[in-house]
Length: 85
Image (tube, rainbow, N blue to C red; front, side, top):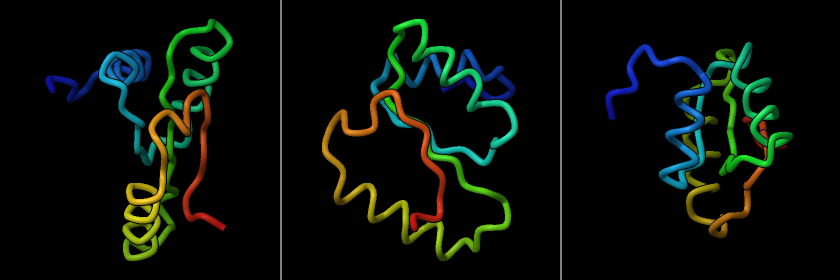
């Protein structure tokens, strides 16, 4: 994708253009930029943040559940955190 090392706004712009929900461990900065896009009425298909302390098995189970059960556009403008509770 050519996004290695890209800043958060660039990654979020790419995700919006491609209609893709972003999955990230960057819980420190991405949230701010995601909500800035929402406030500016720019597309933001959604962000799922996984804390580094979340066991990998739990993260994988949650990601698979989301992939199987989500509707197209369901997460637009939202930031959610894994694990799901």
